[in-house]
Length: 85
Image (cartoon, rainbow, N blue to C red; front, side, top):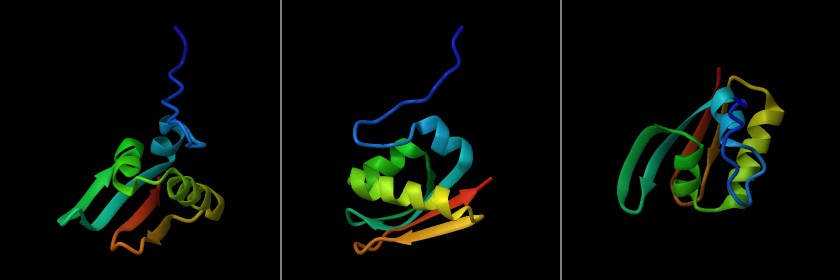
């Protein structure tokens, strides 16, 4: 039986397995008129942000910074926080 390698989304440079094993991702703010304050996985992040370039940029910076906590604020009022564990 082969090891699970995660899901690769089109346009995203990292697999779900890589990101979800390294980070807890929290999204806070207003999205489509509704308040959000929840932990999401890679799939949830892609659906909420809805821009693969921004998702790639956030993930690359979270990996390269190597901090316990990395925050990214989007202009539309969302705050995405990556917690390393």
